[in-house]
Structure formats: structure tokens, C-alpha cells
Length: 103
Image 1 (cartoon, rainbow, N blue to C red):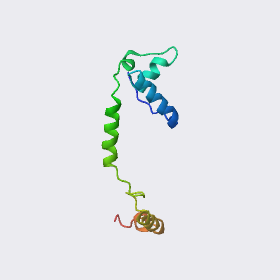
Image 2 (image 1 turned 120 degrees about the vertical axis):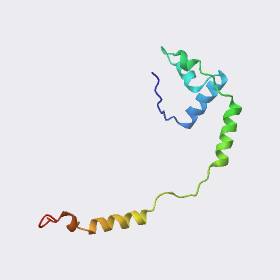
Image 3 (image 1 turned 90 degrees about the horizontal axis):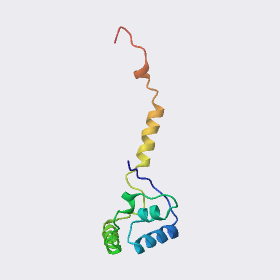
Image 4 (image 1 turned 90 degrees about the vertical axis):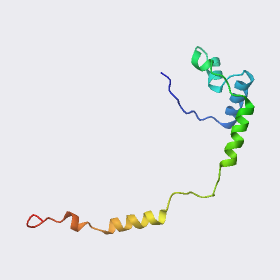
């Protein structure tokens, strides 16, 4: 069974890893598997590497579709704060008051 994990690497380490993998004609994961002492797996090591040109083209396409507005979107803190204030000011008395005559 295969699992995917995220690994944070400093940029210089990631750059060196991708260059080493490209030079050996494999993926970064396969390069790690092949060079990690005492460990290797056929499924990872045999995975073909995408050509560097293909990565560059994918990056260019992604860059063409990225828009940065320079601020967070999808949040309206003023409205959220107003909702919280209303909720905290309301003692919910009508909802929690005992009912009389079964009503």
C-alpha cells in the first residue's frame, strides 16, 4: 500500500534534488529511493521522470492563470464580528425560558 507524505525542504535542497533526479533521468522520489542507504522500491524507482521542458511548460501555464489581489479573499471579518456581537448580546432567553401550559 502506498501513502503520500508531504516533506518540506529548503529551496537549495529541493533545487539540488530536482537537478540530481533530472540528471539521472528519474523523479525526485525515485532518486531518493535509489540513493537512500538500505532502501529501494521497484514501483518508485521505475517511475519515469517528466522532461524538464514539460515541467517548465506546466509552470508557465500555471503562472498565466494565477491572480494575486494582494489581500485575503473570502473573509468578511467585519460581518463575522457583527454576527458574534449579536450572538453574545442575545441572552437567548426566549429559547431557554421554561414553557407554561405545555406551550
